[in-house]
Structures are given as structure tokens and as C-alpha cells.
Amino acid sequence: MRFLLVALGGALGAPLRYLIDRTVQAHHDTTFPWGTFAANITGSVILGVLTGAALSGAASQDVQDLLGIGLCGALTTYSTFSYETLTLVEAGARFFAVANVAASVVGGLGAVFLGLTFAQAVFA
Image (cartoon, rainbow, N blue to C red; front, side, top):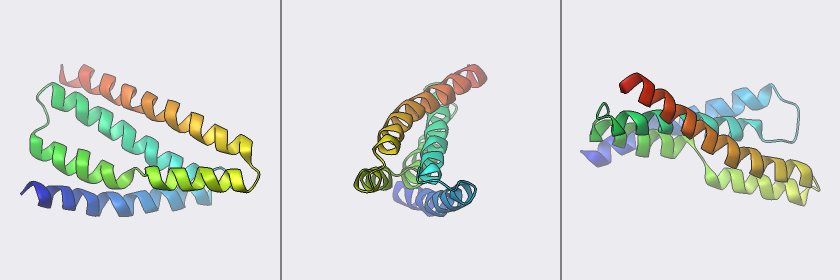
């Protein structure tokens, strides 16, 4: 059953990532990978909220499998982040490459923290 929940979450997360990426990138005419950044931050917020809910006992193991492993696992993408950062370096856009790394790490950690803090306030 866990496998099916993870697969279902992944089946939802992958197209959601694609839609977020395409929608955001269509509104930004820049070499910075805003679409991937937005998808990763979105997934980090969701995972933070889910973690807070799980710690308070408000999220079952099934919900964690569906949303945490499945949805967030497919929604966020370290490989695309890495590829796009390398592409920026190769194109000579080193500032954007460093900015992507810094913003992604700080933004991702901040998003998890905000999601966790929100969930702890709601589910406490």
C-alpha cells in the first residue's frame, strides 16, 4: 500500500513541477531558472507543513508517504537545479549560478522552517 501512495504522490508531483516551472519561467525573460526555484521552494514549504503536522500527530504515515515522499519527491528536483547551475556556469553567467545556489539553499531551508512553524502553530 505504501508503494501505491508514493507512486500516486509522484504522479501528482511530477506534472505539478512541470506546470510550475513552465508557468513561472514564461513570466521571466532571464537566464535565472525561476521555474525550478519556484518548484523547489513550493515543495520545501509543503514538506515543512507536513513535517509539522506529522510531529503533532495530525498527519498519518499514509499522508506522509503520499505527500512527503511521493508528491514532494517528484515536485522538487535536485538534478535539474544542478544541471541548470552548471549550464549557467558554462554560459559565463557565474553571478546567476552563485545566486541560484545561495537562493536555493537559503530559500529552501527558510521555506521548510516557515512551513514547520506554520504547522506547529496550527496543529499545536
